[in-house]
View 1 (cartoon, one colour):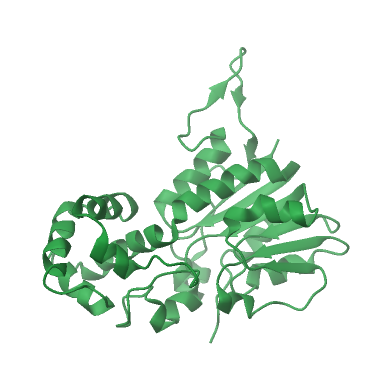
View 2: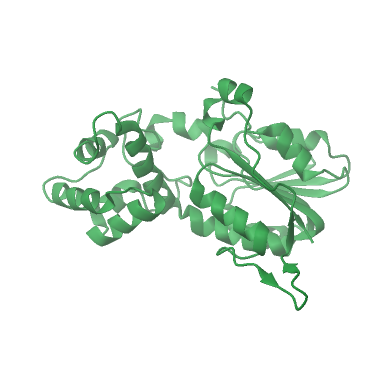
Length: 298
């Protein structure tokens, strides 16, 4: 099975502007596609990679220039300190779920398979999608669906889930889909499923909180001239990346000095995000929603 086709591979490598003697970090190792390409451009440099998924760690490339760290990338700064690897020349993040994770039926990430509602990227953690659905108060469910899934009728969905779970726990993908169909117009099911599953996955893995931590740490670990290269797949992530590069803040408010010059820790290398070509989307359909942003530390 193809673990994961690296998205926007050439664009990422160009964005990193690799120094052969530099120190680079791939915080989303996955199948090693991006890391393998980065190593082609490194001579005496070093690559540190992060992944919390055990199946990704099994794909480790045997190369003495690579250090693979089995941890969530929220611990980026601590581990780079431990390895005496600060500051770094570039950081790459390919956010979201890998093709391999979507294609593993028992992980519960995909609506294509009937499995337990798990959705944990790190199987050693406790919170699952099933636990959220069966234990979160109705108002909390509404918040999760509205904010993380941008579900328009989040209140109605939360109400139905709360009603159904009192009769029988919602523990599998198909059980959840049977509830969802009552809230969506015929013919729009797949889009609605995707929004609901995205919301649950983000809540299970605290993805936006972790991304915020990563972006703030990138300000500290990158050296001047170092590059931040991030691929996102949904608007919530892309907005955070865009704002941190634009202003150094998640809200996007740009501060100015006495003379009216913008104050930001980054220079945006890309104005608008880079998106995949039609050819890449044909070859890898999961690249269709990818957006790449690049910032250079000032």
